[in-house]
Image 1 (cartoon, rainbow, N blue to C red):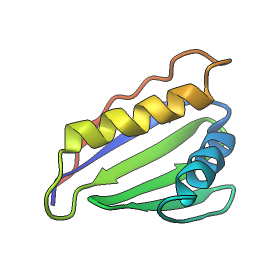
Image 2: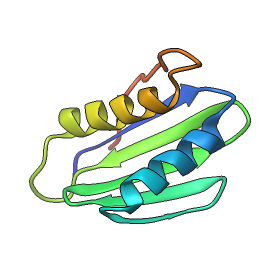
Image 3: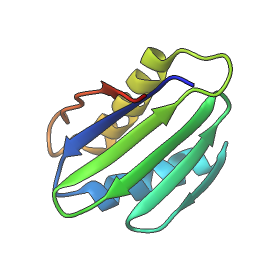
Image 4: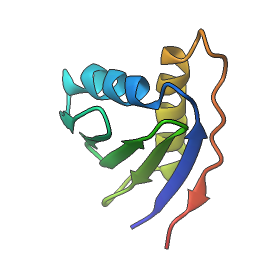
Amino acid sequence: MPASRAIVPTANASRYLQQLCKHWGHKFEASFDPHVGRVALPFGPVDLKADDAALDVTCTIEGEGDLGRMQQVVADHLNRFAHKEGELTFDWQPLD
């Protein structure tokens, strides 16, 4: 199962986590609270954790899917929410 993780520095991690889960929750199964979220995309889940300094994002492909594309879609959506803050930094690292 291909997977990757990025720790995204931001003081607004909880807000972005909730915005992403609410946004995608209209189409996909999503669960979240201010600190932890999960969106069940058709090709695999996006798991999010927020603290005061960063948003921890993990993308996992289950079955057929393109991990690089998933990373880009997640980053694009979060950057739209962060437009006032400026572009967020995603340093995707593969998970074993």
